[in-house]
Image (cartoon, rainbow, N blue to C red; front, side, top):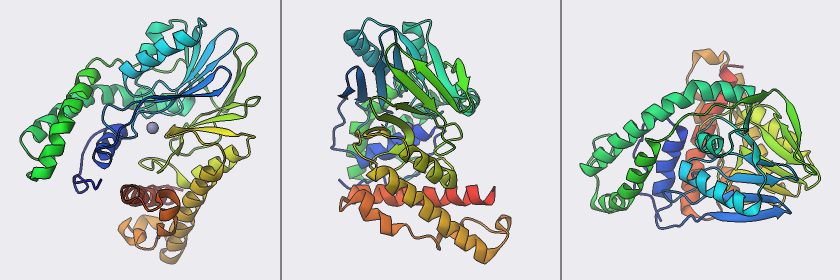
Length: 362
Ligand SMILES: [Zn+2]
């Protein structure tokens, strides 16, 4: 279904809220149910049901050992984290000993306090840059989120979008469907309490859960400065965080030149199952290499333009972006799905922006 909010600019402090609203308008009419997939004996991936339809809440992976449990990402909503914890209790009577935050975006760690309350001896693990970013950004997010949602709800109730433009009749109908979900999000966001990671690492930690080895690695920068992945060598499973988001990458943040290299390092791991940060479980590395190729193409084209123009501090993104063409990748990511094609084009714009920003700050 064509999104009628496509022209609306939402100004919100959190990438997830922005994504939430974009996804909401792009996915009207679609459902997004909670889905649990067993990846191996004692290893499960959870795709969350979203408050607003769309691919918003980060996936969670649960790894059960003989003594304790390792969880990857505590997702966006505390209520979803509670549901996951109830499910973990059904799977095992072992406690959750470790919770990894793959990166600082709050759709992967808003549930931290919920886990800490349920398992008081829990270690919350993060790469050191991720903890720094969370401590810097999350407390403000938690304060701003209810206010921003309040303002957005009030604006929609007045029949306008955030730029003050009156909504069309079709948009008003969609807003009527969206409002109760936004109100639910707002009520839940008011009860959110920040919980920082308690155990940081630089490059790698190896945890033995009892007959189950979990490797936690920072392979380099990508979607954020502190991306962490999990590798289960025996089970040949990789949990990628938002270094991989399927079917359309999330490029609201990141370092594309390093991202491509990080993806190639991930590709070197012997793996037959890959859990992306959002979206369904992948069973080969085709998408991983497609994403690495997309990043590299953006980087190569931006660099070629810089080499024509010279000193990058002297010009703007506008002078770059016309020289970068990522449309050859559109069909590979989006097929002939019009909504996905629109999402791809939006993603490509962000990708050129962050590629230029990274190149200019080299
Ligand atoms: Zn995410």
